[in-house]
Amino acid sequence: MSFKDIEDVLYHGMKDLLSAEKQFRDALPKLAEAAEDQELSDAFREHREETLNQIDRLERGFSMLGRAERSEKCKAASGLVAEGDGIVDESGEAPAKDVMLTAAGRKVEHYEIASYEDCVRWARVLGKKDLAALLEETLEEEKAASKKLQRISDRLAKAAPSPAMH
Image (cartoon, rainbow, N blue to C red; front, side, top):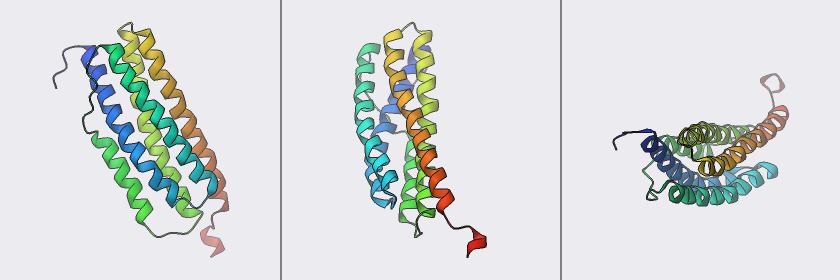
């Protein structure tokens, strides 16, 4: 793709996010199943439902931009999913393994937060206030998901044995 103007940049960012959201949608059930902590498992399941709405918002956003809805394979998302899959496949004991799962989830959220922040800014530069508001709605959900995972991680980390306890 060639980038001629800021609208091309926004379009590319939205295509990247659509791919990322779809990859994360498919990965979240594996994380939920791997989590031993019920609150963590529920958080992953709830965020999958949110992700379905986020995909719908992005699809509406393409219409608002007047561009075809497309996604191109997001390599960053593929790497984050692979990292999460690696944690799922590792042996480990709760709550330590669940802390690792929260870390994988937070990395995803931070990637999404940075990506949505950029797209919101670019939509504003273009004067597309409705599109910016639509993207910002998802941005706020991603921030809330990150905070929730951090809170769960803090609780689990305090419950995990430390080396001195072995």
